[in-house]
Length: 165
Image (cartoon, rainbow, N blue to C red):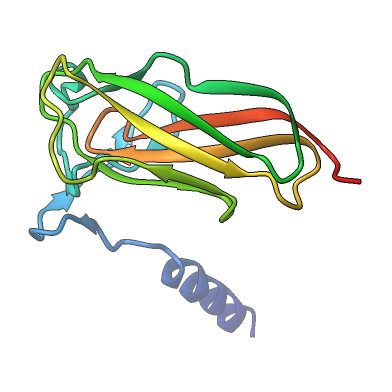
C-alpha cells in the first residue's frame, strides 16, 4: 500500500512539471534569461518579435516628453480642459504611435498614428478632459504605446474641479 501512495505522489509531482519550451512566432525555442538576482524572466518583446539576445535599445525609437504631467489648477465642473503634450523622437529609428488611451471616456487624446516621426523631430498629443460630473481632485492618466523603448509612457492631467452648485 505504501508503494502505491509513493508512486501516486511521484506520478503527480512529475506530471505537474512544465517541460514545454517557450516558442517564438517563427517556432524558434526561446530560452529564459537568468537575472543576477537568480529569478527568470521572459525575453523582451519589441515590435511584436522575440529577441534571443539583448536588444540594443540605443538603436531604437524613443519618445521623450517635455513634461509628462500637466497641472490644470482649479476649474469649474463642466469646463473642458485642453492640453498639448509635446514630445521628441530622441531615438535612432522612426517613431510610430500605436495607441494613446485613457481610463475613461471623459479624457480623450488626439494624436498622429498615420505618419512615422523621424529621429530628432517633434510632434504632440492633444488631450481634452470633460469635467462634467467629475468634482474634486482629479488625476487622469493617458497611456501612450509606440514602437519605442520603453514602449509605454504615462502622461497625466491633474488638478481640482469645483463642484457645480
